[in-house]
Image (cartoon, rainbow, N blue to C red; front, top):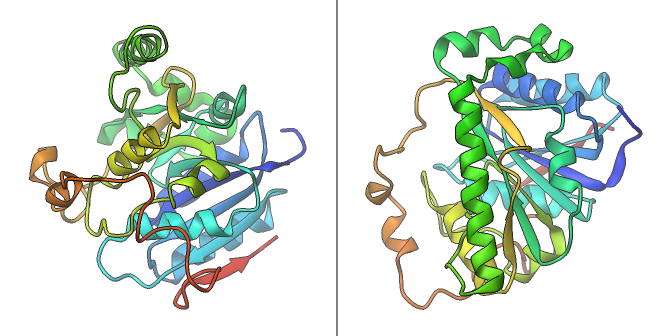
Length: 288
């Protein structure tokens, strides 16, 4: 891996599941483009998750930051904002801890990056059997990419073509609202563009819709989406659904708030704080 690029910060959303986080960080250590820092945005995990971040930092040449907030319900939007505030890079790449990045994941996101455009990737959902085969050894030797089936690879390419279609129509004929879609567990964006919309809306508490809302507000602000679905691939580890998750999107706890009228680009409760820094209950630990 090349020398760390200080313009790139990777933000990993985390809550408990220390084994998943360890595999995620190992995947990030194998990237063809090395980020300048990896930030673990922690929604109130116990000491074991912090220990994983510290252990990884001891054997990594990348700066590792652990940003922790108390766990008071599911506050992913707020936790991600904590990570954004802590980031020193001008370009941010987001990934969830239960996803393992393919070696070209960061490269696919950052190649051709430009202001005014976010980039969205996607993942291969592994079943329980294939998740068990995604071991530390498989990540270190790069063999895990073969876990994707031919049908799954084909589906990613189809999704890429669909996203390209949306982008073509947006540029040439007429806008298709909020497409390509932002996918919170696999996207990238300039920090300056996030600041224009005040980051994630922290009124989203509980599972769901915070990334749909961010994507919508970015489009309303004139920041458009680009797809890297077929190249910025992650492998999602099997696990029970999070508390509050619903089989149908429309049954989610936050849907009523998401569907409110008069949504504006700038989140009223978001990234910027009166103090100019992190909230008082947030703890930032820098390990390298």
